[in-house]
Length: 361
Image (cartoon, rainbow, N blue to C red; front, side):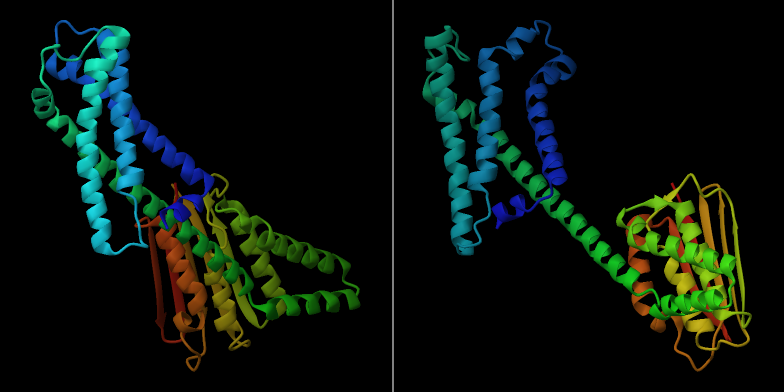
């Protein structure tokens, strides 16, 4: 299971994970000199001593024992019974701690002296003294292993959870794009056809251009996680103008914007559901004597969207009618903006009011 998770990780996640382990190894190699320089203030401190052949072996040995514990002893074994998994981890930890002392004794007291002529301890030191003196170091190795295992598992789980949330939001966004009222497209094409029949070439060209830009935005621009805010606003403008033609003069439509939108980015189609719902559940339910007011402003990084429209009291509320779209938008707002957003949806008599405030970075 653990191997499958690691193999399924995106390359960016694997790279970030390796960087975290590199930071841990760097910490191991810097802990001793930092201790001597800052805390102990050892007067006879020598760089050749803390980074000599024997100490370099010591750093590498600690790292090897730590990662052997993490990826071999403490690895998950879901195919075994829980009691057996616990026994393997406890027994393996004890064995590694004992082997750490034994191997260090053999290398530092015998092999290093044979190869380099140096020892960590005096030659007369007994194994019993060496064993008891290194119990603390063995405990440090065990503690480091548990810490690295915990942090590694937490990081993988958290990053994969975040990646899964992004994938889910991506799927929901794709679904949201498919929810754009199909009647809007068919009616717009019918309107274009009628203008062509009436030989109103300029109006036809304008509508075809707006529809082309709108469809290009929905199909291609929305593939990115963030888009320019001015593109999002322009897309909304195209959508409103196409709806204005569809509704003729039977619906009073007001669309106002203010501010410089070119310096900010937002997730695509973030504002679309509120505007679309105003037409879908306001004007479409009562085409005559309907009105829609849309206002978008940006000042000092604060984006404000207000959408007001009248509706038929017999119609279902906006929350239920536009349930899927609004649920997705709420999730996206919470994911991308956390507490930097405020959404209010209310109804008063036969009027729906939507207010969205976003603090953009």
